[in-house]
Length: 129
Image 1: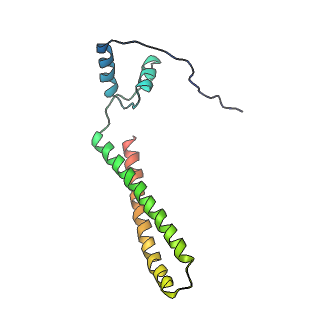
Image 2: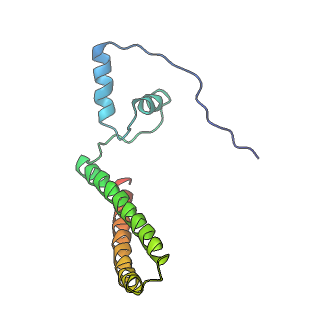
Image 3: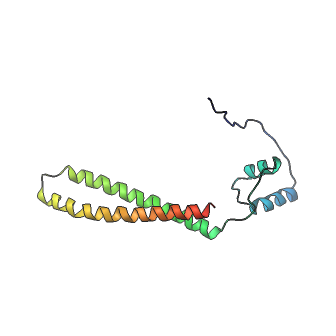
């Protein structure tokens, strides 16, 4: 059975004066909606809306932690590429020793990345409640 796609192809143009627009923005900023169009659609269709402001401090922390997670993932990917290239050079004995030593450090790095990822996920779950 095919799912019906919810395509919004009808336009509603609305003109407001400065005072009306300022009042609309004031009410919009008191909600958790991130887009004015979604907020306006919910008002026009009388849909329920969360009318509280998110904690901006927590939002800033979440943004920083997400960036940190991406950075750590990049470091982990670079590390994997480096190890792969070194595995191709197994002819030299010192590279074998190097690989064995840094394989242990790789486990430590990935466990730290996993801890940060778990923290970001938990913080996101708390934030989105």
